[in-house]
Image (cartoon, helix red, strand yellow):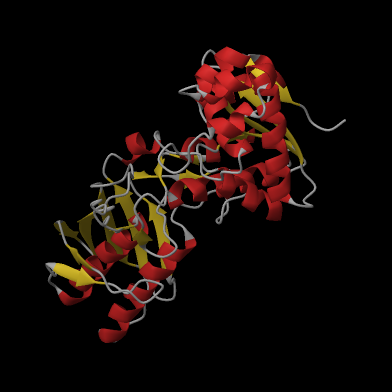
Length: 354
């Protein structure tokens, strides 16, 4: 009898943690004491409780910190310390947000907020404003505050994200649309793909590269001499890329990757992760011509490529391009597919339509 896999824990976004920290800070600022824990309401009604890890105060301000728990999601900000400092502001000024240490600033158009704004996304801003208004109402005053969000070691963590490529400089983004991180949904990665497409469109780029990894991206970028903003770190999430591009088209799309991942795309997989899709060697053998029998017995797609050579990679590229076009439907996007080896050499190519 097969043992069912353990249930994975959900976690909390940086936006939810910043909201909880802001609630603790404003409570101390207006009420004089920090709570040990705070409960917030997420956009879909959930009411998680957060422990307050650190507190400090100064003239006219209070600051609280929450340690992020991303659950079982492989998130670079798991266990990061998120700090919210809330300071009293001039009457009538409302709530204004600032990027503290470790939080980035937006420098390019195409993101949900304009250049010059701190990278604190709209939903976290709304959540924070809500807790500030509630606290202000309870104390009979207007919600006029300066809010500074910071993340310990955020600048270093941001180097492991898409932020530098998207034009978010100096640190992380404070993210979250639901407040919840679902394990292995990799929603943050897919959201970054979407933002990359938005930035490319806002920059007027007619051609983007979506690659499964750094080697294939470098090969495609060198082929065309495209800027970094034209490169989308697709990873395994072909479906997330293609479905968003269908609604937000860019005229030319180059898909680049190794033989294994592009074989899975050619077979119709939209998630190319090894744990969620596998190469079907019987189907791959159908593309292998005289070497079909040997390819059917291969252990890996790379071995199959060694057996059948570039003609197999060409066939995989053509089939992958057809699958991508079927997802894009009638969107005005021309698709090219490049298959690269581990050294970055193009071993198969289905070019843009003439």
